[in-house]
Length: 413
Image (cartoon, rainbow, N blue to C red; front, side, top):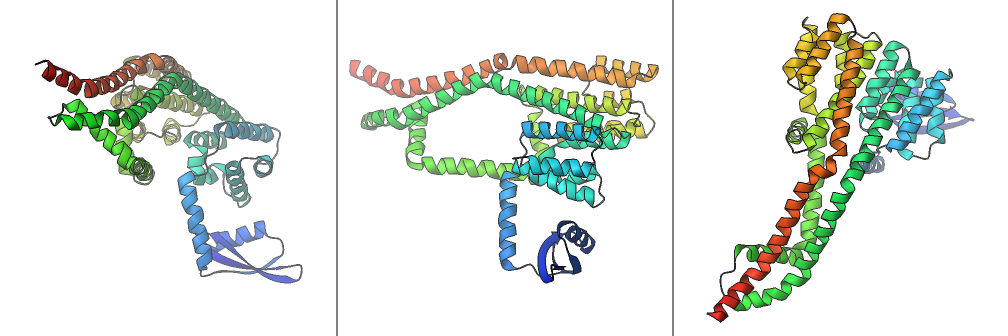
């Protein structure tokens, strides 16, 4: 974004107003849109140091906190936008009305900018590309569908339903994780208290023995030393490492690809990601096919809303297969993501001309698989939780009692 100065004559007074834009034409359009009066000239200027510092501070804060829109607020605004669009209200007026009436600052900012872009002649989906993080890939994909078919209100209604389903699944996931999470937090607090206050009491006894301590005791004493002497540094180091890791994932594609690839191999997480992604992909794809969009174009739009890069890469090969004249079922089969039953359903849909119906049934199948995983999440996590708790208890017990037993045996001998 470049820095421009617009000279405007308003109410007999000459004012110079700074603004940011990609080029001079956009700066002119923005000045006409936002400010009343006669625009004398718009010229590119040297950004003042104070403005540079303010912009740097704003960008830094935005990169840390990114203006994420709350899911409930986004769903309500999408549904409101669908109702207003269905009533014949223009997109610009609808977006402006929602932006002015909301209390969510992130939504106000995003919808306000979208309204400005619409007024400048951009399409809604193209404007949303600048807010992919805030709105999500699924939102942009469904808006593209509405623009291509001319039924934007229907696409927005369907989008609101999908977002509500995703929100519902997330709430179910949180509820399923509540018990294991609370147990692990309680164990972590208990372990920290024991390390910080109980182990030091035994440390002086162990030091007086002047013998080689067993490995569990050495681990406990090392942890006690780290907690009591470098606890704040360890917490700060963990926080900085986590922040750096998030920054690298967001800004470096190859690191994000590697992380996503690792998640697809992780216990339990791999199935959650796989089935939720395939459910959304097939759901959007079936909507596109039903609307009459060509298969290759429908694949491009549906694949565009996928977040996991390895899955996205595999599904892109399906589009290439279709573009070369191959069948959809052969392209899906080559990815090795879909079961043989699903491939047969797609083949039957292609042969009978009911591909949209078959793809929708596939989407329902993956939703069923995903729901089954969420419902059984607590049972699946219990073995891991038990292993971690057992490891912590055994470490504490052996670390404290092994030297005492050794001392007792020495006294008895």
